[in-house]
Image 1 (cartoon, one colour):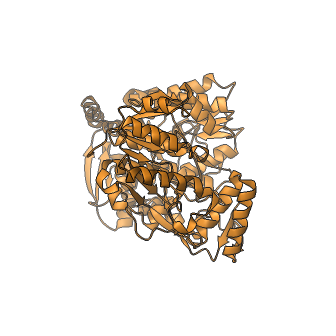
Image 2 (cartoon, rainbow, N blue to C red; image 1 turned 180 degrees about the horizontal axis):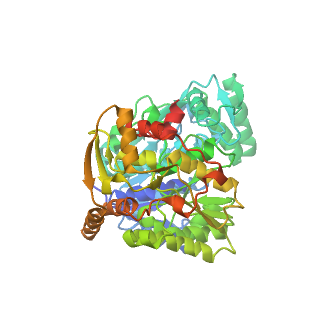
Image 3 (cartoon, rainbow, N blue to C red; image 1 turned 90 degrees about the horizontal axis):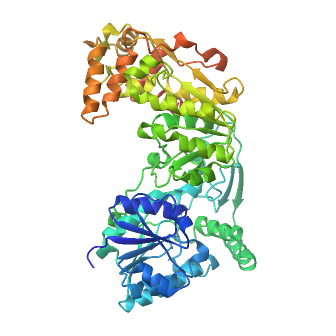
Length: 587
């Protein structure tokens, strides 16, 4: 068989939810099987669904007819039941089966005796026998530890600032994110010949406990104290944990032994030779592994919540998203189109800070409804920009209507949830860094609108993050309020003076008209080029009506005790390609 197109995915849990979008993105026709209609909710467009009786080979065979391959991501309790699925797959003519394995050590012969591996090893042997008989093909993927779990008391316990260091903590552990695992699965099915009847070893990075703890310490306040326990007699501790598992057999003892086998350095936890090239998976550098993800505003706000507050912060990300986040931060995945999925993820949270962008701005009602259903107390909508309360601004940038509609919806729900909408003006350091504010640092060219004299408010991303923290700390004062903050009350002309000072050069000045910018923006949008929105924003910001000056509506800076970095430092950082809070981190 040279290609497969029709894929059955079994299991829609944490791993399955990351494999599914990868299969869809790779162009496969995907069918999800479930025991009831409840498993059907939240599926992407084009994904089929079928009900099946997992205890009936006839029901399974009927559901699998016409399919080419099966990807199983079922949970541990359902692993033994894969034998019946394999038998049904053979009867239905399925050619490739990827079992629910995805372990770090399940194919290491030296670790085969551990109780938590026995079920998966049994399935491996069953597949080997069927493949040897020419009845079906298989691919087993070993991916190391899931990156998302490393800080959840695996390498360290981020929440409680504890670390259980095994044998000095220098043993390397291969690790792969859930999203990358999904992509590896999809790529394996696109490379059938090379992955036929093989155990594929992949990882994005290999990290030790010692290294991971050092990284974690860089992402908390310097005075944070960690409780470190050292396990020197590794063999004795492994034997003890294996005995506990045999006696108790619960998930706590299973996880305890998994942790020990991974970190002991006695087994093949580190894949020295990988098959990444077979599935197109790139290894990460240390900086990439430690890096933040999720846009420009999100990391800045997250950094402020982690380093300048005592809030317990959780990141909510879309199912299948490949975004990465700071080490140790708890990340929950949810289907943003499903209230039930969002409600489950938000349960137990007090505040939601929404940072959705673009077309998703109008979809915040679902998020708000889920927050209300989950008992969330405060919702901060995705505002953080121009003064959308001014109808004149919305007349120039009609896309801002969705932001106003979101706040109006929140106002209608004030008996069930409170809100705070933070308005900041354009992001100052980011805007200079990418050239959004009219300054091309590489070529030392400034584009000034209407001679650059219009006063406008602008705020560094670091200060926006601090504004979120301060607004939450002043929850009573900011309840059901628009909160206007500004890092700088400035003009393009003033920024040019600073730019020439910090660069020591005379800049070329090009004059531009806001009317032309607005006309150009509208023409772009009519052609389907939505970069025209940026032209509209500039047209509103730099015009003679001073629509960008937030001081005219009253600033909260003093009440929130916000102090901005001086403008020369901010400009210098931006022209060096850095954000102010990134300079703070490195220094």
